[in-house]
Length: 271
Image (cartoon, rainbow, N blue to C red; front, top):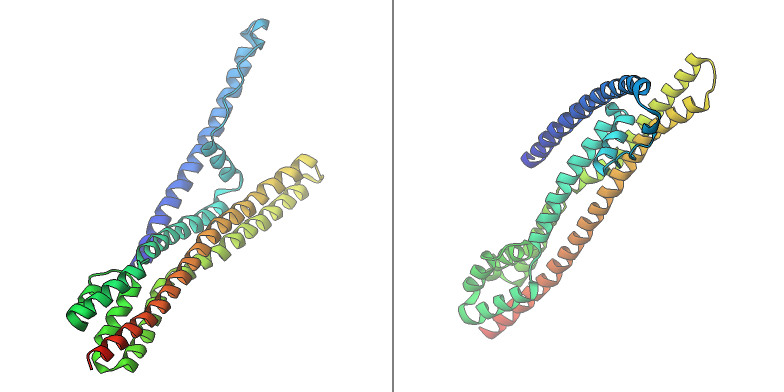
């Protein structure tokens, strides 16, 4: 929960600062356009006819295009979509890193546990699993703690603790799915509000001008595009996390069966 509040605070701070910078840039851009228009008017009267050949304007960078589209889409509605992207990416990246760190070399761990059982018994095997990170090793440790109570208790402990580890692996996914659904909704909301504004402009003008309609619709649809892009990015990361969790859970189930078999062999050997 602390990590969630930390992500929310960082994302909110970033989005607010980004919005203010965009608004400031929008004001500076408007002032620059006014100054440029005045300068062009003054230079047109004094410039010779031979000065008509000018250099082509420099191409806009991708970052500048994004800022321009953000401004055109209205920061009031683009900021919540950006907030969904930032928070969703923060949680997704944290989950991807955590899940990759939770991956264990199960075959090597099983060999080490079996070797420790044959040489030092259950206590030696428990030290091996306790020194290894990951949910598989944690399940092994819980199972070995109940080894002296019988195989049936080992199986129950492994199943119960496996559910706990699975819930830890799935932590945070509900928030990613929330932002996947929320981003397009916010985009559609901005589009609807923008369309209402466009029709208000048409009503105020008293005429359906193609440029007026096209401009209003273009601005309104930018929020939908932004929401869909955010949803696509987060959906890819969400599916990666789900597939990674499925792989780890499969390893946990296979390793649990192998642990029970190793304990059965150890007990039969020491009867």
